Image 1: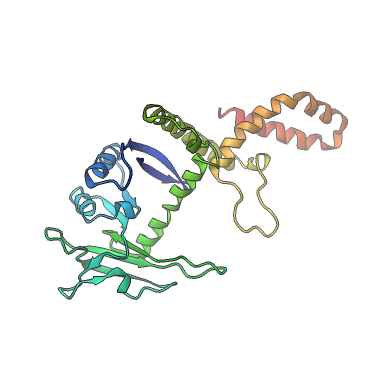
Image 2: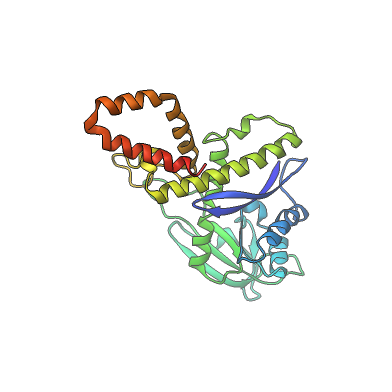
Length: 278
């Protein structure tokens, strides 16, 4: 398995640092520190919020991040015990969180272990939408101090799942490589560079307003955008390269379809703009 720290950007996540582990199962606190420390050093001039899935929902990690004076939002399991105001311990799952509800608990003890301070818990369960319902809500261990900011920020973690799809079936087919650790490490590095370039190129193509030449923008009864910046950047390069193989056909069409000449010319200009970024 491998651990990877990523930067959330454009509803996607850019790999920054990763570790290959010669084992299966969950990571421990030492491995998590080894992953996060280089990233904190790299981004020391920026304000950072660490987002972590349930694997990183450790009170030890939260305590270490507090020592580093780093903001964080770590999802914890609903089977975690908490204690409010010296009352009896209670499971998070027994707090009565229901679909469509949210609440924020300040300065609660999040473990029965001694030696740890208090933290905040932001709880949120997405309401039922179009007949679909999440199996359980979120219980977020955080030190942000605000419910809305905690939930809105943690929603950005969905970019990690989108990035996994891009690196697998949606783009680079990483899962079919079957490489050993040394080659896998090199492959991940190449994909990280290519992925970052595709995202940046896709964003520039959208800024120029020429993404319609790369992919269809809208479909009937579709309310959200069809393609991400990654897809536009990746296939924008394929589009301009593919045009080289049909250059003669394009010139002939421009000659016999004079009424369509302005559209051909706009397409050629879009191709030139994309080529200027390569």
